[in-house]
Picture 1 (cartoon, rainbow, N blue to C red):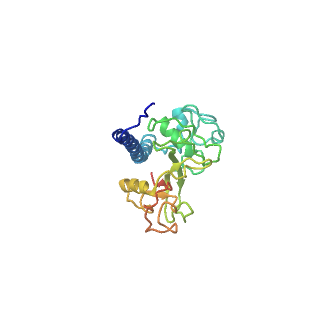
Picture 2 (picture 1 turned 30 degrees about the horizontal axis):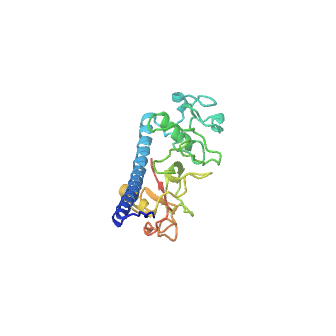
Picture 3 (picture 1 turned 90 degrees about the vertical axis):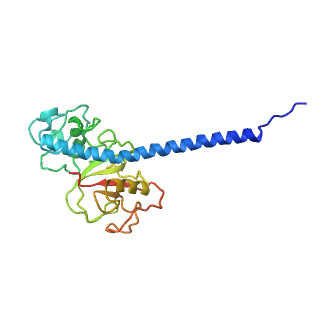
Length: 262
């Protein structure tokens, strides 16, 4: 008659301890990776702001708006004279190298135009940021940012930066706060199919942590503001100046607007 063998209580205890250590190590590793990604958000933001100011000091123009960019890096299409060229402005094919288009030189990175995307290409051409960017909108429309293709991808998974300009004080919307002059600003979030990277990538506590380290910790005030305002904060309206980040919400519901970068 064969005897069955089984694990002793001591052996089972050892196995459980090992499994616990492995699980704890995996969770700790994930936590460390996430913390590193969150730190990178502030580093990337500051890098792009610094690069923009360095570009302006060197070329006496804003990236994207630069009226003589093709004199430095060659024309992707159209003429090489200063200012915008209609052929170049109508391009839908991404650049494969540094060849580019001029901006119109009016002192703004014009909203809803290719200047939003040449902004990143000009910075990269100047060697001020890493990467290579195509300089044209994605197929989803004039605002379509494609992370890693025409705008920078963040170290934070699925997130990245978009550029736009709002030159008047906003009355607010379902997404933006009222009463702000956003100016030239970055939108930070997850890529969408037809617009800037608007979709949420952060929990409110994570957004609050970044905002507190880099700015004032308020989702309404300062240069760093929550986007959208609703789900991420305690606000019931887009003009609620006393709003706070909704810290007991553990869902991923936040993105950022980094305003007035220039």
